[in-house]
Each structure stands twice: as C-alpha cells, then as structure tokens.
Length: 475
Image (cartoon, rainbow, N blue to C red; front, side, top):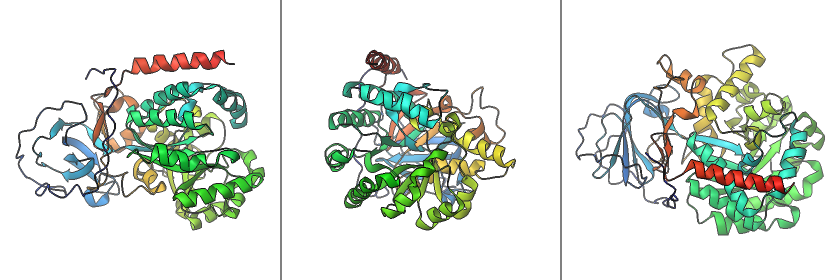
C-alpha cells in the first residue's frame, strides 16, 4: 500500500454490546470446518471494514491456553476474526461474515499486540544523547536540559514521531510517563498519541502547585477518547512524602493507578522509595513500579504480598549501566511483571530487542540457559503479562473472543527470520520490527503490508527534524 499524507480518522468508540451476539455459527474453537458463506471482498487496507478475517495463518499465538496448545495457546493453520473492534473468533476455516475484509495471512504468524509498560515519547528529541552518562548524568544533561525548551507545537511532533515508531514495530498499548507539562502542551501531547490510533495510558506527573491538572486533563482530554486512559505519575521518596500522599488521594478519588520510578539507580536507595510508597498507602495492586532493579529480598517479598506490578526496561538499564533486575526472584515470589521501552534511553522502539535483552541478561548473569524468563515467558510478558500489570487483561493481551482486537501479523519469510526451525524462539531471537506486516488496534488496520496507514513517514521525520533544530537553537 502506498502511504498518503492524509490524517487517520478518529478511532471508533468501543461498542458496549457483546460482539459475540449475532455471529451465530462462527466457530470460536480450533477444528471448526464450516464453509465460507459469503464471497470475501479484497482487502482495501483502509481500516474501516465492519469485520476483518485473517485467513490461514501458519501459526497463531492466542496467549489463551483454552484456545490452543501449551501456555501460549498455539494453533497452526488457523484464522482470526475481528468484528466491531473485538476478537469474534479464533479457529480453522471460519466463515467470513457478509462484507468482511478477508486478509490472506498464509505463511504468517499472528499474535496479540505488544504492551509497552513504560515510555517517555517526548524523549525522541534526545535520541542517542549523553551516551557516556549514567542515569543521573543523563537526567541532568539531556532530560532536564531539553524539556523546558520544547514548545507545545514541537512536543506534538516529537511525540507523534515516537508513537508511530512504537506502533509500526507492533506496540498496540503504550504507557507514557509524562513529565510535568502545562495544559496546552498536554493537549498537543495527547492529540499526537490519539492520531496514531494507539491504545495508550497517559501517566501524568505534576508539580505540587498543579495537582488540579490531573483531573482536568483526564476529564477534558482523555475521557472523550475511547483508546485513552490515565494514571498518576509520581516521584517516590521520603523527601517527597507530602506530595506523594496528595497524589495518592487524587488517584484514589479518580480510580487511577499510581506510576513511579523505583530504585532504577543504586543511589536511589538514599531516598527510601519503598518506605515512602508504603507510608503514603500507595504500595499495592494499583502501583506500577518502573525498573525496580535494586530491590532487596525483603522488598521483593513486600511487593509480592501487596501485589505491586513491575515494568522491566532491559535496554534502557543496559544503556545507562543501571544494573540487572532480579527477575527470577520476582517470578518466584509471584510479582507480576511486563516489559517497557523507556523513551530516550531505549533510543528506538523494538520490542523484539527488549524481549531478547530480557532473556539474555538473566542467562548471562546466572550462566543458566533455563533461567526465567524463558522464551515463552518473555512472549507472555510482552503481551498478556503487560496487560495484567495494567488491570487490562480483560480487554487486551490475548486473542480471546470478546477482547478488543489488538493484533499483529508477522512475516517470517525474510532474510533475518527464515528458514523455519522453532518459531517461538525465532520470534524473540530473530524477530525485528521489519517483520511486522500488519497491526490492528481495536480492529482497525494501522499498518498494512509493512506500511503505516494514512501516514507519510518522511513528513513526520521532517517535522521532527525542524522541531529539533528549534530546540538546539534555544540552547
């Protein structure tokens, strides 16, 4: 498909009625052998068909053991039906509803969209920067030095660039930890996210005097968008206990999760972040801790008991020399964990690279090829595991009928991926963003045959380059 410069349409709102009603004979389990009852029309690639049938995938990873074999629910030579924004059926030889778009995915792999638990999209403005610095140096010389120089209109350009990068590489749900910015800048930030068609969680940090921005942004800018939701982003530490308590009260009033960086650097220990979160009554299942590298045995036990969730960002941790998370210990204690890119210190979007690093770091550290996460475990972390961390597993993360239709199609017929040997291993160890052929969010096509729908990438890059030049001129 040739990309155009027109803007994508506003995503369709979710339907409240169950999508399963009315499809009658569509089989939802493997092994169905019903003939197609309507002549399929060709795939237009415009994302607007009422139903889409992915026909004849070589392998489907449903992430639902009830729909296939093994923990990942694998099916061979199967179809996936999307209708009204939901998964309507998974099985063999599903009938195509009248008027459905039928997409031939023979030879392809189908799986749920990736869930990126931690990002800072605006940091595309400083990609590759401060590459000799650790976390504290990078924060001082790149992060804090750049953010005040970004005007609202240029914030839109940086966020759009990074959000489209994430989308084209297979991320369908993204959590963005947003540093304190004004209302006008927030409006442009959210507009950039919405225009990509991503499902996103906007985690709002704020200055003490601007706590009222959180409910205002949520009500006016996020609540009207069907693919958007909110969290309250905080800084944990005993020196910030009063603002942390106030943020917890706001989050509780709004029914939102708390999102905090915790023990990313060994020097963070002096701030006693775990103690502060517990004291502020923020240490529980509604807390998402980013990084959590330097947890003690006792703190891991506390996190498990409180059902705290963790976002693991291995590429960023490697880049900044921050350390290696104790992922096997977290797993043994039952702490839920998913994967994140982490903005500017990940430098680009590549969930395949994140998965491979998550596996490789633990193998190298423990000198054990069977240590957690295994290949199946890291695939789950990148999809359903991430959804569980966000309390969104009832909506996304697997191809279970009734869930929202966030779906990836991977092309294994490439120089970096072929020939077939062990496709689960190849997805993690050989996969690259270029293998992502199709991306669907809420059932709408956002990438088709390797091209983003209704996006001119060259123009997006030109706009970001102009914005970067203005930031440099403001130095």
